Length: 174
Image (tube, rainbow, N blue to C red; front, side, top):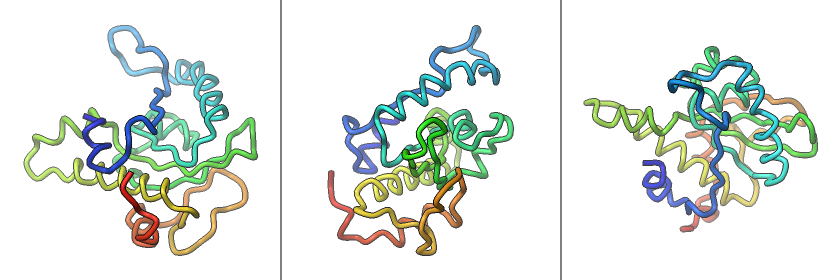
């Protein structure tokens, strides 16, 4: 499902590094506990530090919670999807990354068959926003504001704002 949505958003799958916040599924497919998420966070931090991405797309509430620094039950991904964060790696403050919060593909896939569901279109719009951020020579932040110098601060506005302000000439087919 995700591969198909990446194609629709004109993002090459080979250019993506997809990793789970939690490296192994808990017994009986239950949701991971906070201590399990914390135990896996070192691996994720190392992956981010090693790869130094320009943009991270946080898929779902566990991923959103990691970047927000909140417990997963407080992440509120349905309210937060489409938001941009300016995230600074806690172990390497020279590594600053734009993080886009969005829905988990399995949720979107389940919602596709619901009549009138807007979630699939919103998910695709989020992926297209990520692409706009990736191909832009300079990241264009909401309302023309520069990113804050420090802290994992939410940027104001929405992804739609960011796309609207990205110069069209910087959005080229991949």
